[in-house]
Structure formats: structure tokens, C-alpha cells
Length: 204
Image (cartoon, rainbow, N blue to C red; front, side, top):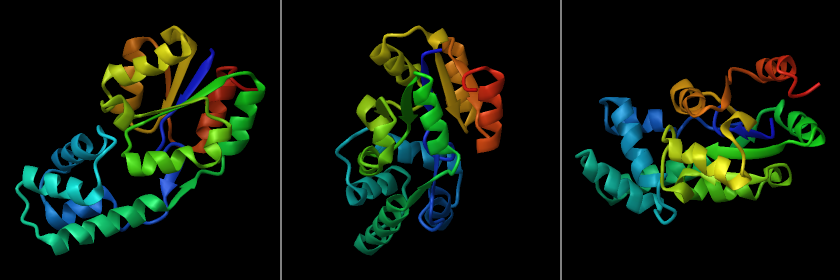
């Protein structure tokens, strides 16, 4: 094993506020299938580096045929910016990152994220430990597309069997990784991850 790949949200970090989450916004203004809302949001916000919140919400509302005006655009722009500006890293994370670096592993972050948030993440103390950031807006592709995983393998010049993916979403993180030949752990808690990494002799 040479490279450990982490997902971001609900794996190594979580949002401080609930107000402004996509689930809440969907309930307020769409009130239909959440998966459709999420997929549309991802396609608009998370596959391009140059989409502002206001223009993005305008495109989203048009695509989903949601009635809107400038006031509504501002409301959700403000909600989303506040939501994405406040995030917290899980307590287990940094002690684990130190162990992994001491063991000689390369560490990567692979996430479906918009540019506003991704660029903030790059400036946190994660930058000290991570050897590569692979965000959907740079890759112009959303997990579970194999392209995203292959980008990590290509960057580090490794075989699939030399990488481990850790993520909370089974269908987007675990399934595609395993299909490509990567090892994968379905994240549930910090304690669980530590136990599985010790069991697999990734850390001592």
C-alpha cells in the first residue's frame, strides 16, 4: 500500500451548521426527489471552477423549473455561503494523518466539491499532510465516475492495488474504487477506521 485516499464530507469533516444544507434547500424550494435535486446541483456547481453561487442557483432553478426572483437567489446564496464557510474536522483525523505520514504513506483527498469550498479546504492545515487534492470541479467529473479515481492513480503513478479509498458513501466511494481494483473501507466512525487500518496492518 502506497497511497491512502480520503473522501471529504462526513469522512474527515462535517459542516458546523445544518441550515443551508442541500437537503434543507431541497425541502424548501423543490419538494420532490432529492436525488434529482442533488444531481442537478452537482452538475452545475461541482464540475466547473467558475460558477458563482448566484449564477449557479439561477441555472439550478431554471433547470428544475423552480420559480425564483432576485430575493430568492440571494436567500439561498447567503445560506449556502454561510453553510460552506463553517466546517469542522473530526477529532480522529490529525492524529491518524501523523501516523500515516510517519509510516511513509502518500495521502490524497478525493471529493465532489464546488470551487468556493475546495479552495478554502486547500488553505487549511490539511495542506501540511495531504500530497494531492482531487476535486470534482478540477476534474470536471463527479464520483462515482471512474475517471476521478484514475486521476489519483495517474498522479501518484501507482497500480490500483497500491491505493486504499476511505469514504462514507458506499455507492460513490466504495463500489467504484473496488471495481477498479482499489481496496476500500466504508467509513462509519473514526474508531472504526482506526480499527480497520490496524487490522489491515496499515498503521500500528
